Image (cartoon, rainbow, N blue to C red; front, side, top):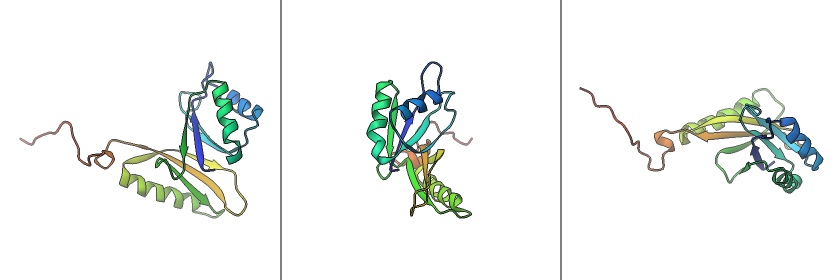
Length: 150
C-alpha cells in the first residue's frame, strides 16, 4: 500500500457506489479507502493492492475520472504508518504526523485506514495539505500586507 489514488467520483450526479462498482468490475482489489464529502465535491481516496495499480488506472481512464496519485516516500503530503492492534497506535501515528506538519506548514486533510496485513499490521495513510504560513513559503519569509503600530 505504497500509493494513494484520489478522485472525485463524478458521474452525474456524483456516485461513489458507481465508482466502486467499476473498480470491482475491473478486478481492482482495494487495500484501503477514505476521503471526505465524497458525494459533495470532495475526494474519494483509495489504495489498490500493489498488483492492481495498473488495473485501477485503466478503469479510471476508461470512465474518464480525473484523478491524482500520491506516492509514499515521494510525495511529502502522504505519510504511511503501520499500526499494531494496541491502544494508542493511531494516536502515535497522528502525533508524529502533526509534529511534522507543524514544522512544514501542513494540516491533515483525511485519514485512510487499510486492511490488516499479516506480519506488518494495519496500514494507515495520512494525507496532509499545505497552508499558507511562513514555514510553508519557499522563501521562508512572509510577504504581503503589514500593519504598523501608531
